[in-house]
Image (cartoon, rainbow, N blue to C red; front, side, top):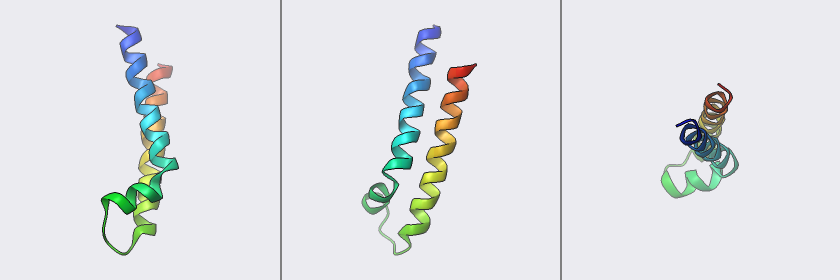
Length: 60
């Protein structure tokens, strides 16, 4: 059971890191409005929070 939770936590960390790294390309694909800088900034913050949550799950 603990190994399954660890794999889920690692997947959450991976998703968060990918969101931070590829925020600009993700916003270009998903969102079609003009203010992509703010959307990329928001996606980077969301990815950082997701990565922190995954790390906390893995740690505890």
